[in-house]
Length: 65
Image (tube, rainbow, N blue to C red; front, side, top):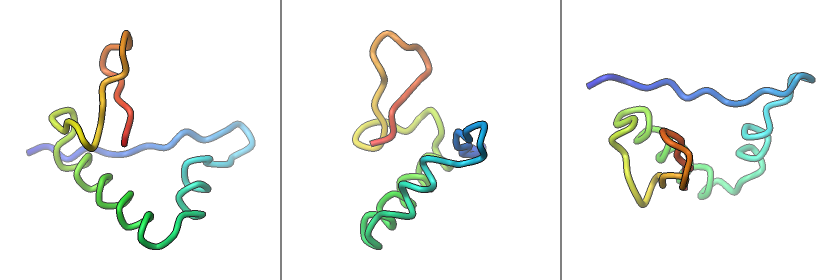
């Protein structure tokens, strides 16, 4: 199975808002987030709810839950 690479948005100033948010999470919440990323990397577009959900009217874009 193909492995997917996760990329984060970086602002023009160089900050990475998602990484900053994840760093602020409790250890338990951070572990849950990391596990969901591992699943996403392993399964890519085949991963479905409850881990990801389609965004209405935006083909091929999903929100991580």
